Amino acid sequence: MRRILTLAFSTVLTGCMVGPDYHQPAMSVPAGYKEAPGWVQAQPADAAPKGPWWQVYNDAELNKLEPLVAVNNQTLAADYAAFEQAEAITDEVRGGLFPTIGLTSSATRAGNGGGGSSGSIGGASNGPKTSGTFEGSVSWSPDIWGKIRRQLEADRAAAQVSAADLANATLSEQALLATDYVDLRGSDSIIALLTQTVAAYQRSLQIAQNQFNAGVATPLDVITARTQLEGAQAQLISAGEARAQYEHAIAVLVGHAPADLSLPAGAQIAAVPEIPVGVPSVLLQRRPDIAAAERLMAENNAQIGVAEAAFYPTISLTALGGYSANPISGLFSVSNALWSLGSNVSETLFDGGTRSATVAAAKFGYQQSVATYRQTVLTAFQQVEDGLSDLRILAQQAVVEQAAVSDAGRAVQIALNEYQAGTQAYTTVVTAQATYFSDQQTALNVQQSRLLASIALIQALGGGWQLSDLPQ
Image 1 (cartoon, rainbow, N blue to C red):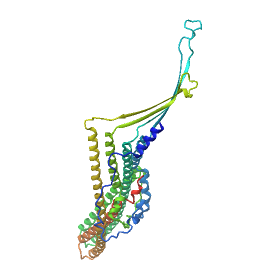
Image 2: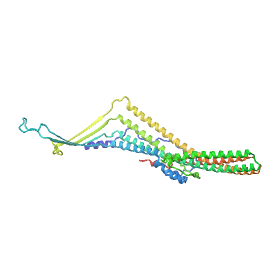
Image 3: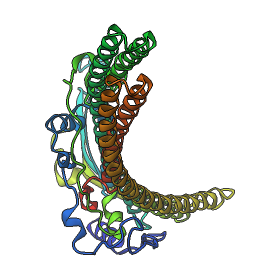
Image 4: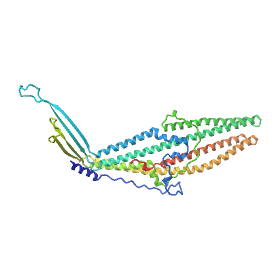
C-alpha cells in the first residue's frame, strides 16, 4: 500500500496538467498622458496618494467621516462576505488533493436458542456472544491530469477577483463620500453667498426707499428692489434642500440612519491638491478594477484546463485495514487482522459532444475576459485623461472667473453711488448686482468642480491601491 501511495503521490506531483498555462495578454500602453505634457518619468509611484488618500484635502471633518465607510458601510460588508466565501471555496477545492481517511468500529451481541436446560433435545443452547470490528479506510482519487489543480488555480484567481472587487468597491464608496462632502460644502458656500446677497439687497432696498422718500426715485425703484430681495430669499430657502439631501447621503455611506448624523455648516475646501499621475504603465498596477479583470482572465484560463481534464480517465484508489473477531475477545490479534486494496478506473467513451462544447464554452469565456480586460484598461486611461484635462481647464477658468468677480464687485459699488447721486437709473444697479451674484456663484461652482475633478482623478489612479495588496 505504501508503494501504491508513493507512486500515486509522485505521479500527481510530476504529472502534467492539461489545459493552457496562463500568460497575461500583451496590452499596448502609451508612453505618457496626452493631458500631462512635460511630465518626467522618475519614481512615479513614490509620490502617489497612498492609504488614506482623502487626507490631501486637509479637512478635519472629512478625515473623520472617511474611515467609517470601510467599517459601517453595508454594501462593503456584503462585498467582504463575498471575498470570504471565495476564500472558503478555495480551501474546499484544495481538500480534494488529499486522501480521505476514515475510521469505523462496531460491536454486536447476539445468541441463538431459547436458553433451555441441558437435558433438552439438541443439547444446551449457545449463550450470547459479542463480535466486533475495528477498521480504517483510505480513499483517494489522484489528480493525475491536474483537474483539481486547475480548479484550484481558478478558485484562487476568483478569490483574488473578489478581493480586487472589494478594494474597488471600497474606493468607489470613499470617493462617493468625498464627492457628497464637497457637494455639501458647496451648498454651504451657496447658502453663505445667498445670505450675503440677501443682506446686500436689503441695503439696496433701503437706499431705494430713501430715494423715494426724498422724492428723487419712483415707486418702481422700490418695487424692483423688493422683488430682487424676495427672489434671493426664495433661493436661500431652496438651497437648504440640496444640502439636506447631501447630508442624508453621507449618513447612509457611513452606515448611519439620516436622523443620526448632523454636520454643521462649514466652508468649502480651499486648496485643490496637486496629484502626481505617474506613467500609464504604472496605472495597470494601481487600479483594483484592472486587477480584477486580469485575475478573471486567469480564472477563465484555468477553467479551460478543468474542462479538458474531463476527456481523461478518473482513477480511484482505496485501501482498508483492521480487525474483526467473533467473539470480540482478542480483537487486535494478528489472526483477526484483515485488509484490502482496490483501484477503479472510469472513462466516458461517448457523451454526444458535451465535453467538447464545455471546452469551447470555456475558451470563449476566456476570450470574453480578455476583451473585458483590454476595455477596462482603455477606460482607465480615458478617466485619467479626463481628470487631467478637467483640472487644467478649470484652473484656467478659475483665474478668469476670479477677475470677473472682482470687476463685478466694483461695478456694483459704482452703480449704487451713481444711483444715489441721481445720475443712473435703478435698473443699472439691479443689472450690476445680478451680474455680481452670478459671477460669485460661478466662481464657487468652478471651485467645487475642481475639487470633484481631483477626487475623480485620485479614484482613476486607484486611490493609492497597489497590485501587491491582493491576497496571495
